Length: 221
Ligand SMILES: [Zn+2]
Image (tube, rainbow, N blue to C red; front, side, top):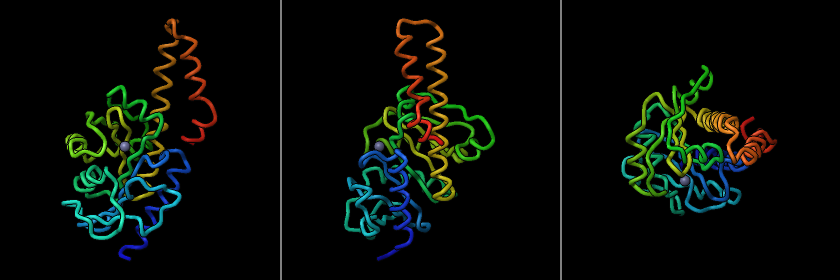
């Protein structure tokens, strides 16, 4: 089997992301750069806990032609290829439907990033790509239009998020940093809205309590 160790790394990362709640069911996918011409990518619709290195697909970066692997590659392979083509400094691209960042993607706004540590992982801001249906070349071209050399985290409008990194570890850290930023941002918005003593005050307080509860705090710890 070609590229066994990097395929194994994709499997390990997928299980880690599923364990941490960033990959739910078969939602979410990732790609790692193999060399200048190839990437490995998760297969489409395979349970992460049943997946082995043989299920990982090897694709050509420039045209997504399959070089190795029995399975059908992730429907978002085109999106990962856009990231890895543009960001030649990056080895990893991870797409998730992580809860808080996906909720924020509904607002359709870029997010400022504060603090040197978060900026080193995410960039000066989190940008947003316009809406297009999942798994389409339309979506990857919307993302391509907003990709920037200094921004490692993007929201996909009404869908989820995608992060890249100079190593698999950095991309994983960016995913966690984005979720923490999204929780903070959502909480601030809810607190500001609840302070207006609006009719939905009680419902807003419940949402704030949900964000402060253990499952969310564990997700972003
Ligand atoms: Zn998706």
